[in-house]
Image (cartoon, rainbow, N blue to C red; front, side, top):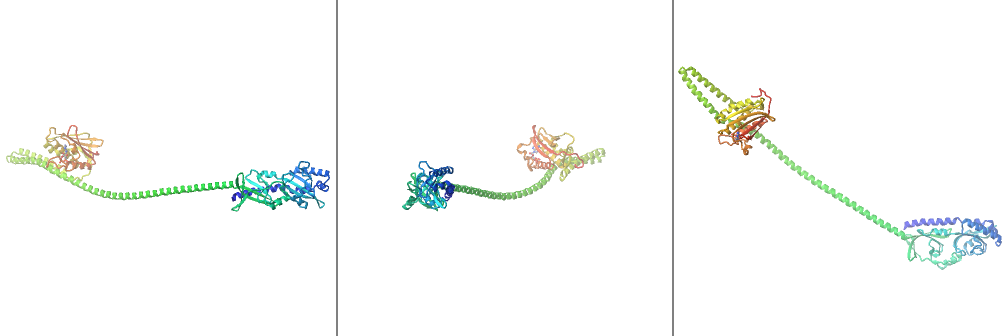
Length: 576
Ligand code: ADP
């Protein structure tokens, strides 16, 4: 309402300014015209028809120029002697307007203004009057009537209802024609009497406007019935003292209320939207917080698990370290045991061999004994040449026994030898010397096949010899008592190194035990015949050389023991 009141205030100011502007244009004119010679002349002799005519013409001309409604001249008794509308129907000439306040004021020597409904023309107008003075004497009055229709018509159909009311509350000008001559104040007798005196509204019928007024928060509200409904208006008024009227501006509160309602709805909507926005934000924040909380929980859980795992791992690590330490210890023990085993195996081999050797030694010893006995007899009998022959035979026998003994010594030596280039043919020849008695007892034939000239391997000669003795002895065991007792010992070069193979024509190694024959104490031979150490020792010796020993069955039958050794450049001094 306050805002509407401000707007209505502007409209009111505009209306007041327009009215004041419109009227002030004409204000100085009556005095100006009053000074005119023709007018003064006329009033000096009002009945002179020529002067009347001149004045009439003059007034008509001026009225046309100034676009005023009417201009007329009155004598001091109120009779109109000249008018711009002379000779026209309803002319003011001959009319008496002495009841009008503007006449009474002017004849009293004052300039006056008045608004009224013309009693003759029945046209509303605004009157300016001025006395006509000649030589200090008031001879008459000149009146200037201004049309107000043009201003009034500009008020029609606007947003605001504008009306002008006189001091008695009667509407004189209005954009709503139905309100004209209606009283917004009660039309009581004194008011009617005052109006009647000036005949301001001539014969027009005055009626009360059934309006009620109220004050709402300092704003003047007016309820006016019309068109079947009662409309409420916000009323602002301004009293114009120079015109002696009040300009009123009415603004229909329906539009204000609609606006207020729209604004209220908009505000409510905005509040709802804002609340919704806040709710959405709040929810989003809650969601984000929830997510962060979940992430935090997950991270904590993860950290907890990682700690658990780390602890587990540390435990496992500790156990592994313990196990590694144990393994190392076990390995050391194993090495030591293996070393012991090699030695033990060697001693066992010695034991076995000593049985065979005793046989070998006994025979030449017995032969040497009988040769010696018979040599003594032959010398006694003087058969010296025969005795000498006996002595030579004894010497030969001793040589043979010495050779056997030498091999035995080699075999028993500790294996602290260094690895170096070993010529295979020499080792094989030494081996043959040692295994010859065993081969003979088994009635086996050993065929040696050496292909290529440069068959030097990286090994220890004594230990390699030990390995070969073991394998050839096993082969002899395998073929003993069979029809084909051939054993082939071959050596050749291959991509992986130098290969030594021992192939017999025996029963071969059954697949079920092929894996285990290199294990210590694994033997298929009867008690007293085998210790099960030979292949195990051989296996370890070949591994020490960085080589490999395997067994397979030959397609033609029999086992093939295959030893692969690293080839080496021949060097005499390294070999023992
Ligand atoms: P031993 O000869 O005292 O039994 P080895 O370790 O030398 O101990 O041999 C282990 C086992 O390997 C033998 O008992 C035998 O069953 C098998 N074996 C070795 N050489 C041959 C071969 N040439 N033919 C068939 N079996 C063999």
